Amino acid sequence: VARTAGATGYSLAESGTSIVFTLRDDNRLYQVPASGGAVVTVGQATSPALPGNQLFGVSCLGTTCVVATDSATLTRLEPSHLFPMLNGGLRELRSISLVTGSSSTLASYQSVISAPQLSPRGDLVLQVGGLWGHLETYEGSEQSDLYLLIGVVH
Image (cartoon, rainbow, N blue to C red; front, top):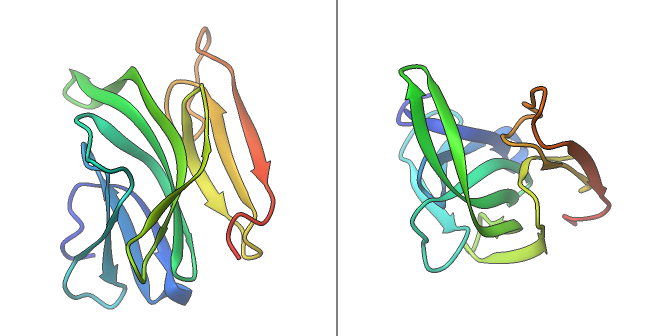
């Protein structure tokens, strides 16, 4: 999709007519029409923008998106591998309105959160724990679990 170079996470929104996406080292959410067009900044997940704040996943239903935020620095260990260094800052699940750009906290966690996935009913599954998003864990890593939150988006 034109003008989405560097996207680190994405979701269809508005009944599939737009694509919402995230970028590395950026806590803003971006949107582009699915048919192509101009990219617009939808909203900011945290205010003020904090250095190193990452969005570790986005999922949308209608005009509401849910993002997982964490304070992390992504370090390149080798040319093809990024590794997150967690800074112990904000770890929040937040909703962002595509209409107003407003952001609100839905929940906060002590462990890393990532990979939120909204169902068509507005229920949400997300990963809590682990070291990296999308259930990427390895032997010796912190345990990760899936959480189910009912009726997060109406």
